[in-house]
View 1 (cartoon, rainbow, N blue to C red):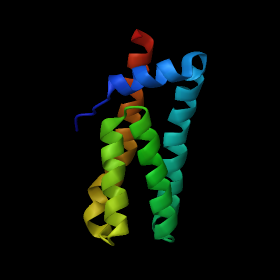
View 2: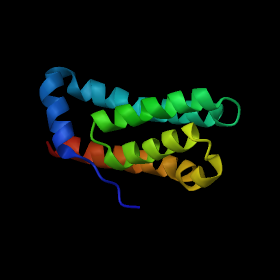
View 3: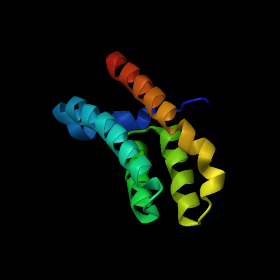
View 4: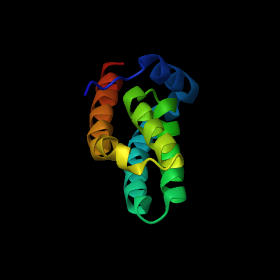
Length: 113
């Protein structure tokens, strides 16, 4: 799967956050992981909680330019909201790798800028 990062979003956040950008981006990475874990934990027992967690993951990813991650989370949020859990398994299974690959690319961008 090709992982897309919107570098313009990262530049905009860097401009907005200035000295706080690096710390905020590091926190963002930990939030990706935390929200993913919370999503998986709530997936089988509370769809509303799973939807809330994946919505937060989608929003954080989009804000920091993790396009593929935000798109994957959006599909999961919409599918769960529509009761289509069975058709989502591939996205659920790939989410960990999408997060990891997105973080790697974002860190590479951070080191180059």
